[in-house]
Length: 370
Picture: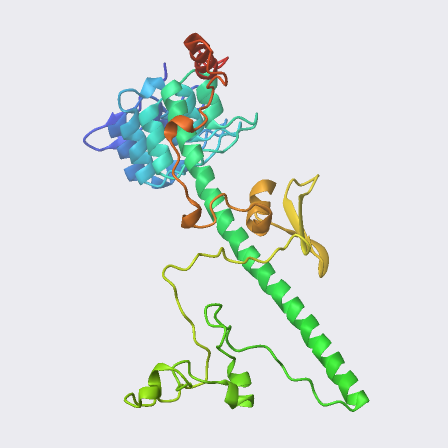
């Protein structure tokens, strides 16, 4: 047992000599959970908060022991509030979270995680806090740390997905610019050829509006202006028509600036057309660094891609290679739940019900969990 720190009242002089084992007074006070002594020591010398012993242990490491009970969490919270480094390591690479996990201190583990402790930190052996909790059979702490690591991985994946979406938009813009440059070059070649042959420049016959399939008599504005005799209103006077009685007035001419369009109820949704980058972009994982990389056909230099699995990268960069099962809401069809294939359900209808029970037990009672 280490000697307690001598607090001499009323002068409040502190005996801060080092013990026989080489532990400073603050370390001993934290080891035995003497909260009042810890407060007095830090009030006199706050720079001791991250002082080290000969093994690289700090006060925040010493307090995470069964000897500091029942003031373990109180002392830990006090140290963190006064500037203790939550991720500081010992000479063996152990963080305070490693010690809390190995000791099974769930409340201290929660305090450290909320204070910003790195749940994926590795010690000199390569163990994370979750590994130590499993080694020492601290099941509650292991469940909590596993949930924290899952949340951290999902947040990281979300940030990486945002990066790959930005990369996809940039690559699409590059492909469009490349196609536009090729089209401009083709137009220049055609114009040069026409000039050499003495031909007039070719007119762009691209229609400014599409003709509705429900009105075959609707013409493009250019065609209407070039041949105005063909642009007749469908209700205009015709021989033998209903206007021969002379009672009706002549309809005003209809403007031919744009074709008619007729909407018949709900139009069928069309899936958005996305560019296919498979011919322009290549994605792979580097064998040495294990970092995803990509190249383009206009730039053969390998460049780093967001740190995601290759299948996720390909789904984002090559959406046409992985079409959605439901392109629009009109493709959704309800299905009876009894007809849905269940996991572990026997295929034959004549199977015994005990077969289904056995298959479910094989899925639930996985080896090594019990």
